[in-house]
Amino acid sequence: MSKDILSITDSRTGKSYELDVTDGNIRAKDLRQIKVNDDEFGMMSYDPSFENTASCKSSVTFIDGDKGILRYRGYPIEQLAEKSTQLEVSKLLIDGELPNKVDLDKWISDVKEFNSVPKEIENIITSFPKNSHPMGVLISAIAALGTFYPNSKEISDEEENYKNICRLMAQVPILAAYFYRHSQGLPIVPPDNSMSYSENFLNMLFQGDEKKLNPVLVDAMDTLLILHADHEQNCSASVMRNTGSSEPDPYSAVASATAALYGPLHGGANEAVLEMLTNEIKTVDNIPEFLEKVQKKEALLMGFGHRVYKSYDPRAKYIKKAADSVFEITGTNPLLDIALELESIALSEDYFIQRNLYPNVDFYSGLIYQSMGIPTPMFTVLFTIGRTPGWLAQWKEFLNDKDQKIARPRQIYTGYDSRDYVELSSR
Image (cartoon, rainbow, N blue to C red; front, side, top):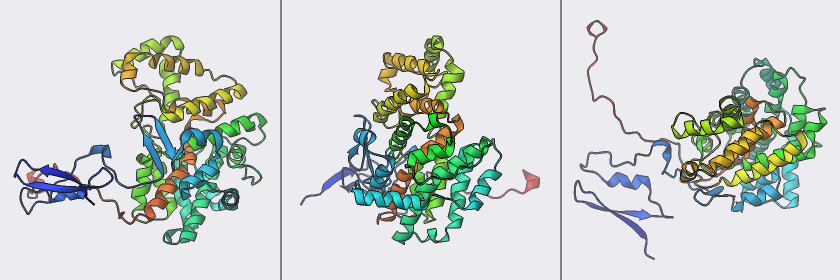
């Protein structure tokens, strides 16, 4: 059976090389054979931000950015958003298949078994200043969790890994809710195992406020968590894998991924959308002037466009659908009129169409959270809760990938050549 081969001729030396092509790609390390002199290190590919470098083989999530396709384990996001639940999708991502009823019931039961955190963790959370950013608290609390489960370092033990996956699924929302209550000067609300995953989380936030526990809002929260569950090798997923490559416990890896998500260019983008709508645009009348500034590179259009998608973000359709259902319960968000008009204009002007600046998942999610009564600094925390199963799926897949070893990117050195130390008196 013939192999696919990429033939390269080096114009510097006239030498030709044959590189194996597997799954339509070459191994970057095969470039190392290309040298001018035998004592050279060999050729590398220079790829800032890893825009065209595949760091792994993965069967978790498929994205076709040109066609606007997103699939978890082969299932279209549209079907999962309409028909599934957050815990069912989490099981799909982590194990690779949709569970049958027996397996799903066991999974839900196993997650609920760990529906509490050590009292010391609660004390740590309530020791933070109430005005702390909740993402900083969450990063710290997730990392601290690992110290209470010393066996979590035994990452070659599948049974131990399963326990820690269940714990993280159960306890990340608890950490988030506990700090929210603390930040608001409210008593901690413990988890309620009689409730579904999303209902329990909202109850820990808003116990006693029946309007905020409306089943429509619970369903919307579940949908948002599904839509955020995984997104291929994005910044935080790559960090999860890179941190995991040095073989720490999964709590440390999730904490590092959470730190990556914290930034405004990643998980913090929905906060930036509200900032734009509230403080930069302010009114519908100001939209034309704001979009002119965008075209002049004097302002950023947050919530539009995506690094991967070159057409409409497939998640945005269901975010908007969830927004409509939420606003029927909560009333119209005053920023919605601005958002709708902004979307309408941006989708009709050539400048934005030519640059593929379509609404993405962040554009409406912040409006939904705000209408549900969730403070803006908590938005990225909700993203973290949604993304946790995706990170765990990536981590589990990494552990079973025999091609993987500790991450160690190369660099192209641009500094000084060797030079001698100069005494302080002579500088």
